[in-house]
Every structure is written in structure tokens, then in C-alpha cells.
Image 1 (cartoon, rainbow, N blue to C red):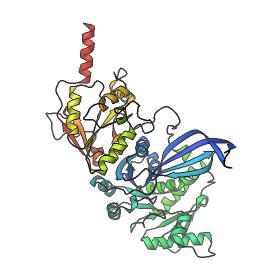
Image 2 (cartoon, rainbow, N blue to C red; image 1 turned 45 degrees about the vertical axis):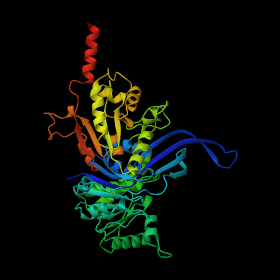
Image 3 (cartoon, rainbow, N blue to C red; image 1 turned 180 degrees about the vertical axis):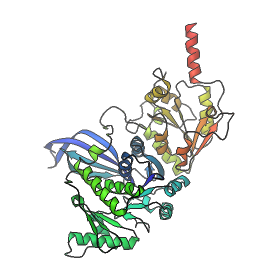
Image 4 (spheres, helix red, strand yellow; image 1 turned 90 degrees about the vertical axis):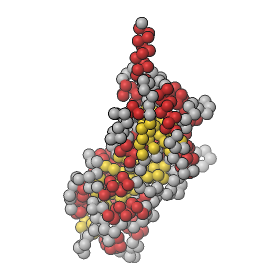
Length: 486
């Protein structure tokens, strides 16, 4: 493949709540689910991207993320799955789909997040990565990303094969897509069936209608456990049956089908070959247990241990105004206020193990570059991995409170990874700041900060500010230890 596989569309936060039912509610004849565990995972386009990344492909996800805890959680889950997120701003809340389950069966699905928010404009880097893709999968869940004009223009212009997985509430596919992959119910909504027509006749008529309407190269209608029906320029459709039994949890099967077809096209397969591969992959996925067994396990939310990434599930420490500036909720509130006023979001990061004058100078200079300053703080686990088992000297709770107490710091976000990439993909700062010790040769402009590539995904900028010479946490520790041994 000459470039990454790009997945473009709406991402949701899916949550499976497992429990047991032993009684009915006393005030209403409904079952009571006693929760035993809950597992989060990316849904929608995010799930399709995870499936593609699990096959070893380089995967870029172009999606909209909200400034809330759900958006932070999605950013962490996607990064852990090896997906490169190129985020768009999203007004409103992260959409969530919650399945209440008992003994492997879904009792109820609870959707929340409200009406679709408006996705922001893509950066030049997003448009560049679409142009350089080996294949593009549009995973439309009807929430607006596939309708964004600049993205549609880029999709129409790319030379890569485009697979369009449509949604009845979404827009028409851009003209000229290689393959559209609706399911049976979507075809019936998009192309009304003739009364009394057979299942295959309805699927074939709908597929041909969509192919002409969208000027698509081909349309494959997925038929659940019976495989898929492919219509292309010829008058006779191709039916691709499943290779074996495909009974089980079908959640995500359509995403698995579309992702497999996209990967096959990226590797040079014919459309008919790609559909055969996709049917086999989706069938094996369902027969193997579905989404619960294929995805890397995420940390159940009912446990006390933290999941990777920004601490989206942990409340900020209590204890007054300083503590109110620490955590995902504090950052989300700040982002909403600053962006609603059209302000500039500035962020910086580091371990800040022993807060000293060099740190303060950098933070004060950074705060002057915008309307708020968010500090991305390495967690205790992250510091130990970077600095060794004897670090940090101070816990993340103490370090975060010290930073939040500074007048130049508006909020603190703790992250677990060795780099702040996951946190940055959610915060999407306009400016990322590092102290001058990151530049060599007295501020050589040719030096590229490691976060610069990440910032380019949404059009952000990276800068270096002057750093006070002779101030270093490591030097302070060494000097302190030397004094003690005298």
C-alpha cells in the first residue's frame, strides 16, 4: 500500500454494561439489572478504524471529537488500538450507545448525546492525508462528518478507491465511489421496494438504483448470515454466500465488512474479490463472538484501576478551587468556555517533578500566547517509565495541585503514556509550547518538536519559549543528594 488507509466518519462511544437479572422492579413490571462490569470501546467509524488497524494496516481516522469526557475516552481508546486520530472539532456532546446485557443477550439499548453537533473545518493536513491514502472508507453514522463540504470535495478528488458505508440519515455518496456497502434495511429505506418482490429482487433493485443515483462503481448489499449481493455495471448481480455458520452477536459486523473490503481494495484486489474477502471476514467475526472477543479488552469502568490516556473516568480531587482545575471535567469546561468566546487554547506538558523557576518562566510565557493554558502532566506511571523507578519525587496528585495553584495555569490534565499525543488529540490546542531547552543551537528553527506532527492534524502550531539556564529537576535532585552525603 502506498499510503495509509483513511477511515472518515462519525465516532461514537459504545459501552456494554453486563449484569444479572434476579428480580423485577417493585414499582413496575420490568427486570432489574445488577451491573457487574462495563466496557467502553469506539463505535461507528472508530470501530471500523480499529478493525483495520488490527489487520496491521497504517490507519488514519478523520472524525469529530467533542470537548467532554466521552471525547477524551475515545481518544485514549483509539490511540491504544494503534489508530492515528486526525480530529475535527465537534460542537455538542459525544454520542454514546449503551447496551444493557445479561447472559450474553441485549436487554435494552440506551442512546444519549442529543442532536448531532456540527463538525469543524478540516485542516490542510487532513486534506493531504486523504489525497495520499491507499484507500478511504467513509463510515457514515448520520451525524454530519460525511456531509462536511471540504471533506466531500477531498473525497471526490482522491485517486484512492473509496468505500462508502451509508446511513439513511446521512448524505448521498460522493459521485464515483468504488463501492457502497449498505445493509438490507438501509437499501429499503433509500430505495422503496416493490410490493411482493422477493428478498433478492428487492436487494438487486435497490443496489442498482443506488449505483445509478450515486454514480458508484458497485454496490454490495449485506444480507446478514446469507452473505452479500454485489451489483456493478453488468445486469446480473453476484451473490457471495457466507462460508459457514454466522450466528452470534452481529454488532459491528457491517463495520468489519466495510473495513475488510477497504483493506482488500488498498492492496489491489478487484471489487468482486474485495467483497468475497469482506463476507468471509464478517462471517468469521460474528461466529467468533463478535465485538466482545475481537477488540483488545479495555479496562472495565467499574474497577478502580485507571485506563490509559487522559483520566476521563476519574473525578477531580476535592478540596476547593485549586482541585477544581484538575481533571478531564475541568479541562472540558474550560475548552467549552474559551472556544465559545473565539479564544486561543494554549497547552504545554511535562513531568514537573520538582517545580522550579525554569518551569514557572516557561508557564508564564506560554500563558501570554493565548486565552488559557492547559498543562498536560505525565502521571506517576509515565514519569517512572521515562525517568526510572526512583521518580517521580512527588506524586501526581501533589504535582497537579502545585501547577493548578499557579495563576498562569488554567487547568491540568494527567496522562499515562510516555508522550502526550493521546491527550493532545482530544484537547486540540491551537498552540503547543515547549521550553527553550528543547531547541538546540540557541533556538535553531530547523529543529522539529516531537509534537509538531500531531498538532498539524488539526492546524495547530508548535512554538518554543525561552528557558532559564541552569534550572533542571534532575540537577536539583543531584545537588540535593550531594548535599546530604557531605
